[in-house]
Image (cartoon, rainbow, N blue to C red; front, side, top):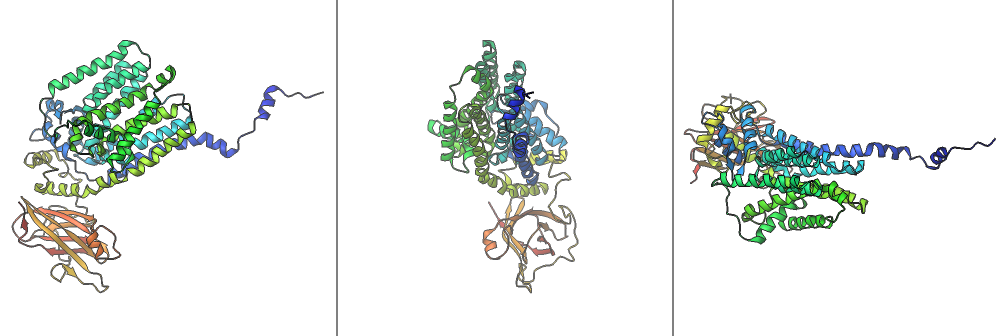
Length: 567
């Protein structure tokens, strides 16, 4: 009797089984690739938690506008404008931060990170179903990298910026997702919320109309976003009134405007070079044009991504018209990363969804991720380098004399009473000078065991040949503040904190340490960078002393009683 196998059995034996390793990779590989999307927000979380708690310039102007003298909210002021931008939702976030979050920059920064994560999740929800698991995972990881790119560090560590830019991007993506899923009323609602977050969000209206048109929706679905957009812009033109704070006037040079807009779209492809950013922006738009010829089915599937690309381009047009006069690097500001991220996310999805040369397109995604992250290092380092100035501002505000920081802290006579009334940082329990033993402003300390250098109140020779040096190079009076600058070292150790004492051993000022000083480090071979310090104290009569905490204890030296007075 002949044993005849079934056709299904023969087919099963004819197909070789995949090696176990390859089968596991096929099963778990996309999931592991998708998990890489968690890395960029975690890296940005580290940046936020390392950055100062003191808020930045625009935050203070908004807080002055929306609060009374006692720190209470003025609800009607929420509907005002900031540099001609509708600023309702960010203003509300600033108030909530001030009232319930002690005005901590890091706390609001955590919320902005949550907004960024929401943007990535919305991108994931919008991805075409025709993509395979590897493609979807790779695009989610790429989207996370672009949203949390080092180029955009400004939006997170200076949370007042991300509270408008990243929130606006989140709401725009939500509007596009709603339109993609034919929830048109919800799409318009999210569009309206985006429009009262920041003025660049006005570009969402043509984006929504384009999505509806590419999907083949009825004419009224295409017209509705355009009509609402016209009403929104008309209302803005009527209500905004004359606004200050914009700096230079918009340029009337079309070439300068094009440089600003195109370099903004390509900024993730360079560190600091506008020319490279310009070329990258043009290249990105060219790639989009090359992919514009699609079938009706492809257009419908990619409609939301073309909408996102139009949104990014619309933002670039608006920004170039108002900021180009600020110079050739106007388009490379860190806060604009959310706009360039929108363009490149849309471009990558359109490229990967194109049926030709899939392997080459996969390489394009990986290249974009790696290159843009590495190229963001100079931008991130520049923002990090400014952190000590912000910490010093917090100390100056705490002692009531931020006179040297008019470019960071406007109208202190009006602002400081509001901060005290709100318990707002630096008048909250979170404020510290960073000293290991908890020494803080207002403390009276016992200096009996604190040592003083014996040579000119500056240097103490040590047996090992390495000196204690407490070098105050700059001692100047700015209004009611006394500003100190120099470098200090004990043996091979840098200072861990610096304080200023009055004649009664009360801590009346303090400062920041671990500031790179290449000139000082050249005099102390074998020492790591970070010997510099800056400090601030009240310009009060009577002798003051500056003290440094090192791993081997406190060292203290007197200050001159005749500091230089600046104009």
